Image 1 (spheres, rainbow, N blue to C red):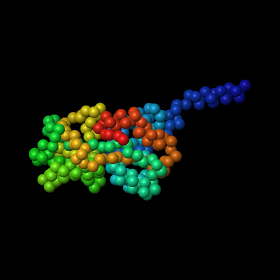
Image 2: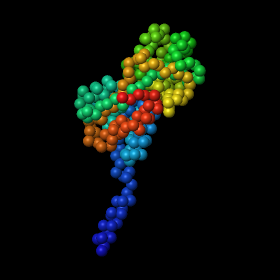
Image 3: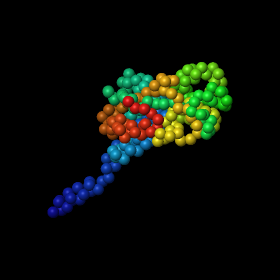
Image 4: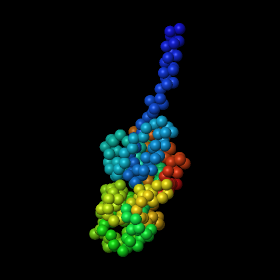
Amino acid sequence: MRQCLALSSIVFSVLLVSPSVYAEAVYAAVASNFTDAMKDIAQQYEAESGNKVVLTFGSSGKFVAQIQHGAPFQVFLSADQNKPDALEKAGLVAANSRFTYAIGALALWSAKPNFIDNNDAHLKSGDFNKVALANPKLAPYGVAAMEVLAGLGLTESTKEKWVMGENISQTYQFVSTGNADLGFVALSQIMSQGQIKSGSSWIIPTDQYSPIRQDAVLLKSAEHNVAAQGLLDYLRSDKARSIIHSYGYQTE
């Protein structure tokens, strides 16, 4: 009788244990341009899976160096394709895990209302103190900005007014704080629910710069981690894509 009561007590205790006890943590390195979208996606994934997502945002280039030196990330969402490709060639990526999770868009933005009238006129006028852009040696959005300037014939005329951010987050900060009157930022940084949040902008036509294809990979150290794979699977779901589109990205 006592044995039966003891067994019943154990079963009852197991049933009372919260699913979160069994939740796994996923450690994800995420390109800074994807910050807001990924926070929303991670929140939904956590709610639906019971797993915990630990996000670190920053420069894709720095993440590559950290991963190569053993940083304990399990998932990497890059701002481009080159860096995941380099990790893949180095044998640090789980086989067949790489895919394009978003295609970025570039915008010229000012924190000042009515400063940019949804075209390139103010940029061409030169009537501004500084123009911010991400360092093209480090950031794909910087490469895109340089392509736009070259296409408009403004590279030399604006060069003395450039202020370069280490990544697209720092570039955005230059503009949002007024240190630069305008700057080339990721559309996702100034858009939410399909609307520009503040200031004024020119959403640059995508034919003026090379596609900003952003790839995600499962790192080899986590190739058997169900929660990490689950996060990448969720990133390709209709729910996640709806969030991604709301921040101005495209998906395949």
